[in-house]
Image (cartoon, rainbow, N blue to C red):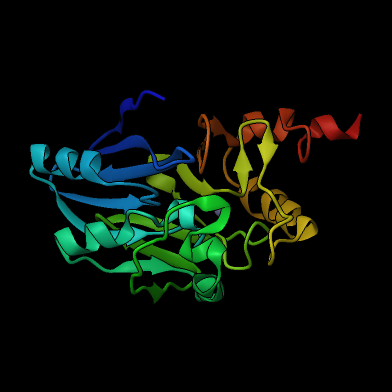
Length: 220
Ligand SMILES: [Zn+2]
Protein backbone atom coordinates (compact mmCIF):
# COMPACT_ATOMS: atom_id res chain seq x y z
CA UNK A 1 0.00 0.00 0.00
CA UNK A 2 1.31 3.46 -0.85
CA UNK A 3 2.04 5.84 1.97
CA UNK A 4 -0.22 8.84 2.26
CA UNK A 5 1.10 12.39 2.29
CA UNK A 6 1.34 14.28 5.57
CA UNK A 7 -1.90 15.87 6.76
CA UNK A 8 -1.62 19.30 8.34
CA UNK A 9 -3.72 21.15 10.84
CA UNK A 10 -2.20 24.54 11.64
CA UNK A 11 1.31 23.94 12.97
CA UNK A 12 0.87 20.21 13.47
CA UNK A 13 1.23 17.48 10.92
CA UNK A 14 0.24 13.84 10.81
CA UNK A 15 2.21 11.50 8.58
CA UNK A 16 0.96 7.98 8.00
CA UNK A 17 3.06 4.93 7.16
CA UNK A 18 1.85 1.37 6.70
CA UNK A 19 4.54 -0.84 8.20
CA UNK A 20 5.31 -4.50 8.71
CA UNK A 21 3.78 -7.72 7.40
CA UNK A 22 0.24 -6.71 8.45
CA UNK A 23 0.54 -3.13 7.11
CA UNK A 24 -0.07 -1.64 10.51
CA UNK A 25 -0.79 2.08 10.57
CA UNK A 26 2.13 3.96 12.10
CA UNK A 27 1.46 7.67 12.66
CA UNK A 28 3.93 10.46 13.21
CA UNK A 29 2.55 13.59 14.85
CA UNK A 30 4.91 16.54 14.62
CA UNK A 31 5.41 20.26 14.44
CA UNK A 32 8.48 21.76 12.78
CA UNK A 33 10.80 20.67 15.62
CA UNK A 34 9.51 17.68 17.53
CA UNK A 35 7.75 14.44 16.75
CA UNK A 36 6.05 11.53 18.47
CA UNK A 37 5.44 8.18 16.85
CA UNK A 38 2.40 6.00 17.46
CA UNK A 39 2.54 2.23 16.82
CA UNK A 40 5.78 1.67 14.91
CA UNK A 41 4.74 -1.78 13.73
CA UNK A 42 7.54 -2.65 11.34
CA UNK A 43 10.97 -1.93 10.03
CA UNK A 44 11.56 1.76 10.70
CA UNK A 45 13.90 3.03 7.96
CA UNK A 46 11.13 5.09 6.28
CA UNK A 47 10.27 6.69 9.60
CA UNK A 48 13.91 7.43 10.41
CA UNK A 49 14.42 8.96 6.96
CA UNK A 50 11.30 11.13 7.37
CA UNK A 51 12.60 12.43 10.72
CA UNK A 52 16.13 13.06 9.44
CA UNK A 53 15.01 14.83 6.27
CA UNK A 54 13.01 17.31 8.34
CA UNK A 55 15.48 17.59 11.22
CA UNK A 56 12.79 16.44 13.68
CA UNK A 57 13.58 15.44 17.24
CA UNK A 58 11.71 12.28 18.24
CA UNK A 59 10.51 12.66 21.84
CA UNK A 60 8.18 9.73 22.60
CA UNK A 61 6.89 6.43 21.27
CA UNK A 62 3.28 5.61 22.13
CA UNK A 63 1.65 2.19 21.67
CA UNK A 64 -2.11 1.79 21.49
CA UNK A 65 -1.66 -1.83 22.63
CA UNK A 66 1.07 -4.44 22.83
CA UNK A 67 0.31 -6.83 19.97
CA UNK A 68 3.45 -7.64 17.98
CA UNK A 69 2.26 -5.95 14.80
CA UNK A 70 2.10 -2.58 16.60
CA UNK A 71 5.49 -2.82 18.30
CA UNK A 72 7.86 -4.50 15.83
CA UNK A 73 9.79 -1.29 15.17
CA UNK A 74 9.87 0.06 18.74
CA UNK A 75 13.33 -1.09 19.78
CA UNK A 76 14.91 0.05 16.51
CA UNK A 77 13.64 3.59 17.18
CA UNK A 78 14.70 3.41 20.84
CA UNK A 79 18.22 2.48 19.74
CA UNK A 80 18.31 5.27 17.15
CA UNK A 81 16.84 8.06 19.29
CA UNK A 82 16.96 6.93 22.95
CA UNK A 83 13.35 7.92 23.62
CA UNK A 84 10.84 6.62 26.20
CA UNK A 85 8.07 4.22 25.21
CA UNK A 86 4.59 4.48 26.73
CA UNK A 87 1.84 1.86 26.74
CA UNK A 88 -0.71 0.44 29.15
CA UNK A 89 0.47 -1.56 32.17
CA UNK A 90 -2.60 -3.75 31.63
CA UNK A 91 -1.06 -5.04 28.39
CA UNK A 92 2.36 -5.84 29.89
CA UNK A 93 1.48 -9.52 30.27
CA UNK A 94 1.13 -9.80 26.48
CA UNK A 95 4.91 -9.48 26.13
CA UNK A 96 5.15 -12.99 27.63
CA UNK A 97 3.02 -14.46 24.83
CA UNK A 98 3.48 -14.87 21.10
CA UNK A 99 0.81 -12.24 20.51
CA UNK A 100 3.10 -9.69 22.12
CA UNK A 101 6.53 -11.16 21.42
CA UNK A 102 5.83 -12.18 17.83
CA UNK A 103 6.28 -15.67 16.50
CA UNK A 104 2.56 -16.36 16.15
CA UNK A 105 1.52 -17.36 12.59
CA UNK A 106 5.21 -17.71 11.70
CA UNK A 107 5.78 -13.98 12.17
CA UNK A 108 9.23 -12.73 13.20
CA UNK A 109 9.98 -12.12 16.87
CA UNK A 110 9.77 -8.57 18.21
CA UNK A 111 13.04 -7.17 19.57
CA UNK A 112 12.31 -6.78 23.27
CA UNK A 113 11.95 -3.25 24.60
CA UNK A 114 11.32 -1.44 27.87
CA UNK A 115 8.20 0.66 28.37
CA UNK A 116 6.57 2.81 31.03
CA UNK A 117 2.89 2.54 31.88
CA UNK A 118 0.92 5.67 31.00
CA UNK A 119 -1.98 6.98 33.09
CA UNK A 120 -5.40 7.53 31.58
CA UNK A 121 -6.41 11.19 31.28
CA UNK A 122 -4.86 14.41 30.09
CA UNK A 123 -1.25 14.55 28.92
CA UNK A 124 0.75 16.91 26.74
CA UNK A 125 2.95 16.08 23.79
CA UNK A 126 4.54 18.69 21.50
CA UNK A 127 2.83 21.32 23.67
CA UNK A 128 -0.51 19.90 22.50
CA UNK A 129 -3.13 18.33 24.73
CA UNK A 130 -3.48 14.58 24.38
CA UNK A 131 -6.20 12.66 26.23
CA UNK A 132 -5.25 9.05 26.86
CA UNK A 133 -8.55 7.17 26.67
CA UNK A 134 -8.95 3.63 28.00
CA UNK A 135 -10.49 1.64 25.14
CA UNK A 136 -10.14 -2.01 26.22
CA UNK A 137 -11.77 -4.96 24.48
CA UNK A 138 -9.31 -5.82 21.72
CA UNK A 139 -6.73 -6.10 24.51
CA UNK A 140 -7.28 -5.40 28.23
CA UNK A 141 -5.00 -2.35 28.12
CA UNK A 142 -6.06 -0.90 24.77
CA UNK A 143 -5.59 2.88 24.58
CA UNK A 144 -6.73 5.59 22.19
CA UNK A 145 -4.79 8.83 21.95
CA UNK A 146 -7.08 11.82 21.33
CA UNK A 147 -5.63 15.19 20.33
CA UNK A 148 -8.49 17.74 20.55
CA UNK A 149 -6.45 20.48 18.85
CA UNK A 150 -5.71 18.18 15.94
CA UNK A 151 -9.28 16.86 15.80
CA UNK A 152 -7.79 13.38 15.58
CA UNK A 153 -7.84 10.15 17.55
CA UNK A 154 -5.39 7.28 17.17
CA UNK A 155 -7.56 4.30 18.00
CA UNK A 156 -5.35 1.27 17.33
CA UNK A 157 -7.36 -1.89 16.67
CA UNK A 158 -10.49 -0.71 18.51
CA UNK A 159 -12.44 0.92 15.66
CA UNK A 160 -11.91 0.51 11.92
CA UNK A 161 -13.55 1.97 8.84
CA UNK A 162 -16.92 0.12 8.86
CA UNK A 163 -15.62 -2.50 11.23
CA UNK A 164 -14.41 -3.09 14.77
CA UNK A 165 -11.39 -4.81 16.27
CA UNK A 166 -11.13 -8.53 16.88
CA UNK A 167 -12.05 -9.66 20.34
CA UNK A 168 -11.37 -13.37 19.92
CA UNK A 169 -7.72 -13.26 20.97
CA UNK A 170 -6.88 -14.20 24.57
CA UNK A 171 -7.69 -11.15 26.70
CA UNK A 172 -10.24 -9.82 24.20
CA UNK A 173 -13.88 -9.15 25.08
CA UNK A 174 -16.51 -8.08 22.57
CA UNK A 175 -18.91 -6.52 25.08
CA UNK A 176 -16.10 -4.46 26.55
CA UNK A 177 -14.88 -3.48 23.07
CA UNK A 178 -18.32 -2.28 21.95
CA UNK A 179 -18.71 -0.32 25.18
CA UNK A 180 -15.30 1.34 24.64
CA UNK A 181 -16.39 2.46 21.18
CA UNK A 182 -19.87 3.65 22.17
CA UNK A 183 -18.91 5.32 25.45
CA UNK A 184 -15.39 6.62 24.77
CA UNK A 185 -14.89 7.08 21.04
CA UNK A 186 -18.44 7.98 20.02
CA UNK A 187 -18.51 10.72 22.66
CA UNK A 188 -15.78 12.60 20.74
CA UNK A 189 -16.83 15.35 18.31
CA UNK A 190 -18.34 14.12 15.02
CA UNK A 191 -15.61 15.59 12.84
CA UNK A 192 -12.80 13.83 14.74
CA UNK A 193 -10.63 11.95 12.29
CA UNK A 194 -10.00 8.35 13.33
CA UNK A 195 -6.65 6.77 12.52
CA UNK A 196 -7.17 3.01 12.88
CA UNK A 197 -4.52 0.36 13.34
CA UNK A 198 -5.19 -1.08 9.89
CA UNK A 199 -6.85 0.24 6.75
CA UNK A 200 -8.18 3.68 5.84
CA UNK A 201 -8.82 6.54 8.23
CA UNK A 202 -12.43 7.46 8.97
CA UNK A 203 -14.32 9.86 11.26
CA UNK A 204 -16.33 9.51 14.46
CA UNK A 205 -19.52 10.87 12.87
CA UNK A 206 -19.23 8.64 9.85
CA UNK A 207 -18.76 5.48 11.92
CA UNK A 208 -21.45 6.49 14.38
CA UNK A 209 -23.91 6.58 11.48
CA UNK A 210 -22.63 3.80 9.25
CA UNK A 211 -20.62 1.25 11.20
CA UNK A 212 -22.51 -2.05 10.88
CA UNK A 213 -21.39 -3.33 14.31
CA UNK A 214 -21.76 -0.34 16.57
CA UNK A 215 -23.36 2.42 14.49
CA UNK A 216 -26.95 3.70 14.25
CA UNK A 217 -27.29 1.37 11.28
CA UNK A 218 -27.45 -1.54 13.73
CA UNK A 219 -30.80 -0.38 15.09
CA UNK A 220 -32.62 -1.26 11.85
ZN1 LIG B 1 -3.97 -5.84 17.84
